[in-house]
Image (cartoon, rainbow, N blue to C red; front, side, top):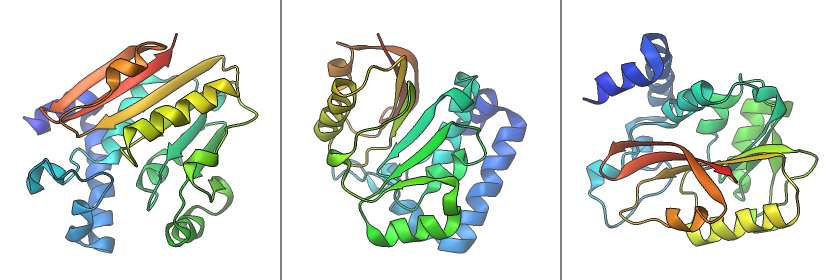
Length: 204
């Protein structure tokens, strides 16, 4: 079922590239790393916490959804080891920003990506995006969603965006999606399973 949905969603070539990407990551980092990507909920079974589909699949969805990437700044909130960054590095965004408070993980990112990424080395609460009219905030359950809502409110209070999108990846039984609908509309929603979905929101 997942295989068929994958082929329909991002094509044979996209699936092949994703599998190569995941195989290389598996060889380099070992199978245990797949248990520790992003958010892990105590409410879910271990098998449901493996975060499949992986970040590469979500980025393939974005490639199909957006057209003028070079107009947008991409902000990965809580970027960790940089798996999402690795998937977007070849997309011609105006700017790619990594927000990650861990010095160790930031150091790993800098070694991988050099000056291709703009690094923000403090907690996300202190961040305000600047010098951009079009932005995509990518949130892979990096911290409590209530914190992320405050994060978005801060960005909109300090900017007048021409275009603002939020990409949310959920694996929680409950979420606060209804809160966003006060100021955003759903442009894309896809449920990979009963507990995992991707939502792309656009500011109204």
